[in-house]
Length: 299
Image (cartoon, rainbow, N blue to C red; front, side):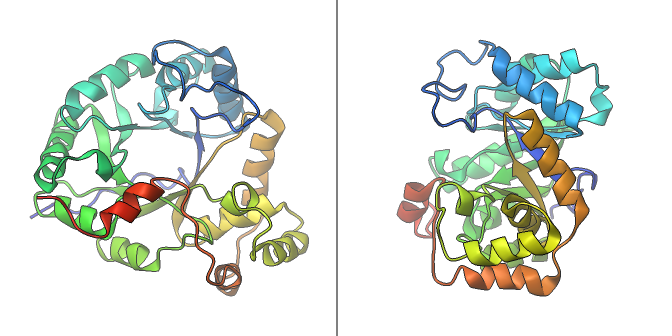
């Protein structure tokens, strides 16, 4: 039987994600480059700005190819390692331990606070996914990761690893915004005592702007004297979820942190935003994979 999930400390209520820059006018990002060890000073400075602004949970990933920047920025910031909650993710399910060892070298640290399987869709079969999870557990046993979890996992994927887990996943990091509410998944995670972390909360203002939640968000933003971005971030946070956001602009990072600390949405306001979405549905990440998945795991 798997042990109860050990939840990370509560201070990671708002995380800064780094790797894919928010400036979509640029032709190149850290995500695009071939060499993950190459250092981009702009990303380093953006991360140092986040730390200086008060962010203490940094979300990285091997796929983002930003780990070298994260490691250098944290080193240059002078912040004690113990004051940062550091997450990274892997897509290498054949050798998650070796992948983490390489990540740690780039991150310039001996451990990460959270290590996630970035996506279940890189697994060749259910057994492959289960084997990878057992290797994730070894990372905890070796002291390379304090907590382990998953990202973009459906109920079936989580249930599969729970069949073999001796350490339960601490978190499932999922795309979460009013146009992708996933109530069944969220209920299941709560029943399993698996923490929820949401990314892409600002989708209604970016990829799907001009949609049905705009009016409700604008009304609440006026009521609380904050931006619509803060309303969407609190919509995630006030469902007892960690929220991951990103920006390369110093003033924007400060504003996000300050605004989300000013208020909380009342339960009826969370419902109002949810209901305003109507029947609109949009998935921006792994959309083709989820469509092909259909709820069935390969043998």
